[in-house]
Length: 184
Image 1 (tube, rainbow, N blue to C red):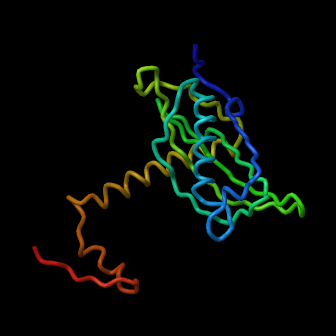
Image 2 (cartoon, helix red, strand yellow):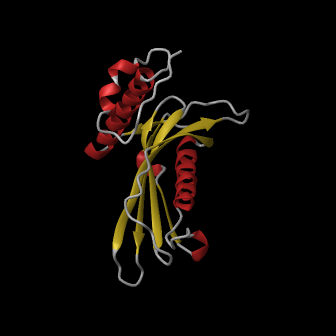
């Protein structure tokens, strides 16, 4: 039976993996797609651990690759639940790399995965809430709510049925674009 609320620490997941030549791209750095795959796996593990159900990725919020990862470095991924809704949760992820010879560590990226819990029939299913015990946990929860609201505003503002071209033309003044609008 699922508890009504869980401490965030109950679902935290950390993995460390050695980056191999088979993970590299044509420039010899670790391929971003490989890192995204690892991020999705750890988000799944964290969300499934929290919800006690199979989980699917609903969305990924902004992945910025801040520093390249080299072959031979250790990559550590950390995941924790930042927000819980009724059937979904936001998993905060952090990716760091470490050069095993020099000991130099780099923050490579952070991201937020929205995961949805599914029951045995593939239907969205309720999940436990989280118990917030620190100001940092409260900040992360509040940030998730704000990010969701901003996303809804962004989506509705650019809906093709209400979008007004004239209101946005000023944005193109110094852009690397040319408008040749076809009249219909």
